[in-house]
Image 1 (cartoon, rainbow, N blue to C red):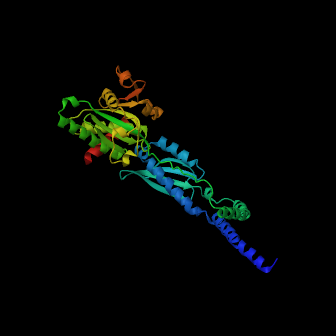
Image 2: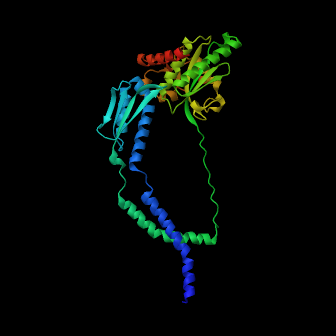
Image 3: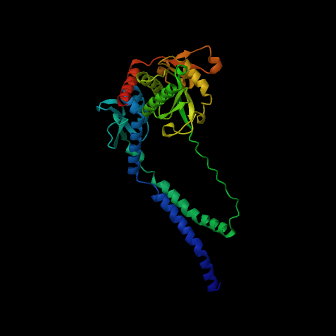
Length: 369
């Protein structure tokens, strides 16, 4: 072959060789240098988990829930990356502990509610769990890259020479609807007919104002229901069924102590809010999936007795066995008309310890109001 033909053939292969080398270099760099620092990842994991535990158990630490905290500690310490977990109260006394506490990699976070420290969480990590994988995996991946790079390059160049003849791929992005499972506390102004219009409006405003105070403790949103009452929408992802009960009794205690002409009854049910209610600035009952028939919910609230909580079956299911024992099956002659097929329960009072907690919360709120 004449030398000029050999030169032209060699010149034509240069782009392919360059592309193959670039693809191979990028892939090898990703294989060998793509992983982050193991120590940095362990620190990020430990710090994040400690802070998450502190936030989610702040209420249990405040209430000194030793059994709940022990269950959580056992569950967390069963994770391969965790050696041990310890919960302390705000006086640094151990409340619950699980696993080994001898690890050198320790992370501590402070649990608080409304700037009030309720306790501390301490984690000990198993540093062995963060060791990098065996090098032979990377060697196999490198070998596969070296073998596949030339073939991939040829395929790419052939497609480039032919032009893009493939059908376009339409990517359909699913929008996050933001739907948030929530607890809805429907509040009926039971004596509305005995009040003048200005007095009704003021009573509803009082209920909304006290509802906002409750939402400062249990994240949610308070809104009026025309002149008939009000509604508290509480984020079900942030609070438990027990805390929703606390919020129901807390609101009634606040309204009882507050100087208002209104008399109120409460019905607690579940619904779906279009977003996180604690982050919303405006909300209407028509936007909440499950509150389409507000009049029926207000009627059910009117059936509740003073200083009690009438709850739906969905709320009852979210309670544990001990908490369910506080509720009694509720029956009324008009239930088949306003709540056909529904099962309702009534919680007439909280146990002494829980009632004391609600009273303390009310005293703090009224002290600042």
